[in-house]
Image (cartoon, rainbow, N blue to C red; front, side, top):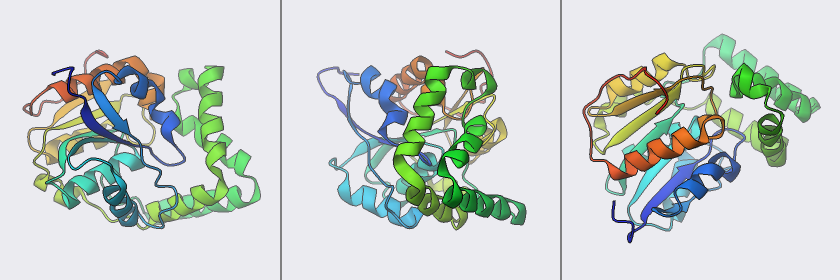
Length: 249
């Protein structure tokens, strides 16, 4: 990469996340990327969030990465505006519709708990967001807790309801033609490895990396490894798809 030219890069946070989710990458990629992180917390639906992002993004063409719900939004944006998204990175992401009846009941129960005691809801979510060893890292866990609490109950309910009605896009992923990297964690309780392999199978020419000893919030659990992978992604042309289950780079 020509370090004299900074790549326009959009980073989309996930559920109950904000720019804190990408703080290590914002620092680690500052020399090679002009980074913009959208606030999509007020959108009533995920398609609306994508339209807002595409309207507000300060770049005509850009590289686009998202984590979890942000990855779903990134894929949706790449499908919506393939002329603007030059390359795509999907981190800890699932592309299918979320709701089974059991899943809907669980999410509704989370919404009810959030209305009664939002702090308790955040504590309930933490073990899914961070693998057990990371959860024992007091500073990391508190950082995730503070980030979630700062967004508040209204944002959680709005995002959760949007998630509950999100359409499946797995059958449309074959239409993504830009260079795409997929990054997952081998201990991700929300978007397990098979979800990442499914994305890699669906997107022709995609490049898959599974990080060892990594949960759902990979950007915070393994900030150095994720930053290095994103740097390689920004540097690289499209690569042939190949499953990867080896060591963390």
